[in-house]
Image (cartoon, rainbow, N blue to C red; front, side):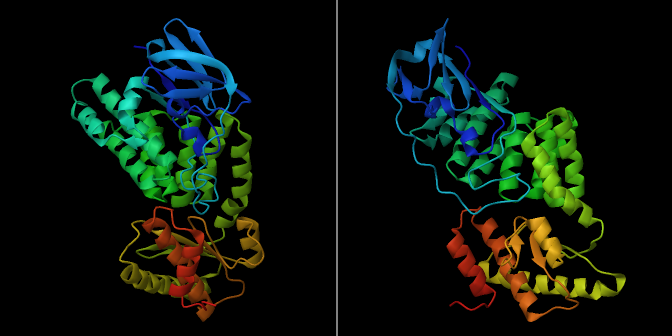
Length: 399
């Protein structure tokens, strides 16, 4: 039977993760409708027949299916309106590694499954767990069976990510990696999900494996830079982004490099201290080390309180950066009224402060609450509730 390649090509959003063979929502004024023998329909901008396959244009590139599955093709019909997009969650990291809940940066992922296999894995819009379990049981029978199982698990991960169920998507992607630790597609998708969910250490580990196998891949280099940006800092991230850009120039990547370059330059002048749960950076002299110590102690105190109240403990160290007012504006590009930014790193302007104040303590706890809630809810908490809870737990006025 002919194979059906799904290619997730470079793009800016979750639409690139839609399973085109099941959705077929390419935008056009007139449509061609492919009627399958199982009763399903594929709506496409165009469709061509060649040999034993039918190829149609989806919004994400050409998709081929076996002609044996097709009953007929009706041409020239009206293109139906696309289904409504899923509700978006609060914006995620500023380095453009991640967009919104359900949106992942596409990075050269290629799935190869025939249409009948897809229909067994995704049944009426839901993942068929028992089918995946059956494929996993036979994954050790042969390399072909292992690859089939990995592809099925990745299809499930893509489907769940597109539906905004990021925790489930991550679970299937990790299961694909357990089936084949070195599968490139699994490494790329698992990394994108880890970045979305702010699991930066796991993302870095996955990309280090991928880099060891394919150090010349722009996709791998870009995601490796993304992982380093949140785990070790902007300077190291830019090194890999520049390598990726040299291999495959991309305006969006160059814009990211240009935007983050001032942050990388500033990092060289910042002092840094660590505690069990935090990595703190701030500008100051040797004499101001006590300021950093006070901030770390306050962060740890707030962490323990939130850990008790929310019955949850983030697994990874949280990065906190204290800026001067001008630095804060230049790096974050936040509006003048913003008192802090939490984009995967907690960024706070502290112009002129040499000691811990009640206002700074409140801001620290407020932003730390956002970090807790983001991870507890897998980035799905509505902004209004997230903000209200942060105000309440930080002891701010609830007016």
